[in-house]
Image 1 (cartoon, rainbow, N blue to C red):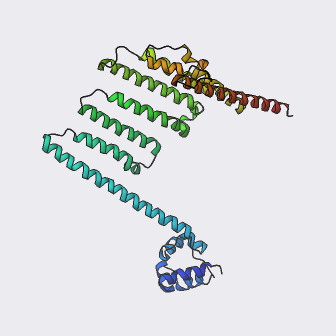
Image 2: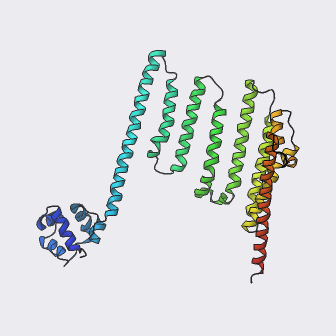
Image 3: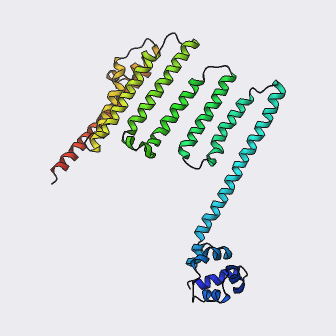
Length: 351
């Protein structure tokens, strides 16, 4: 038999060990009013529901529906357990950081009479804190502030280590980290946040363009550091790095432009499949290096010298494999192109 409001109210009142008079006194109503509720002759005023549900230990929803919402109670219990576990976990890290920091502080002062490597420990713990405890403090814009805090904490650690070792390698270490963060998160930010709504359509081009600029800055810094450090005899950025990076940047943007073609997706796929071998395997044919290892790599991708009758020697095998890859891409491209043209013709003939 389905529970009514009155029977449910009576059941929960008895579970709490309350009389009608006691319940009425808590709600500041008459005993007869409670009696009418339990007989389903009348219903309590809606303003009494929060107080009544609190006294009976049920939710307002359960009181109105006259049934126990086991699923909601289970969710609430799980949420309570999760909050307790999260709080315990946070305090574990607080205590662990304090237990690690205090002995290092004392030892560094006692042994060296000053604070030196202690700052490395402190900055390392700040980095760990940015991953473990700080996310719980950040309530809004987590996707923006958590990666930013992680990056700044890592830069702090690198700066402290560079200062402790009297090194000038901070920028070489931090710029690749910045490039990685921007490569991963910039497309997400442009796609997600309303402030970028006007440029969201060109997300791919903008993200790759920013990556291109940061990559070149990083290569220039590394080139300058290598020359000053005596690791190189001349500047290789303009002669080697910039042409390669510029070519890859051009190729990626050209491939991205395919999506703006006013053709069906089959033809777009065919264009990408046919362009990939053109960008990857044609440029090495015009390159030559005095470095034997580099020249060997260039020779290994020369698909026009492939010979399937010979499968001996590392270079020959690599040529044959690359040639098979190119032929497969071209064949797939032709199949997609034929399918796309057939679909286009069929669609054009439809009334």
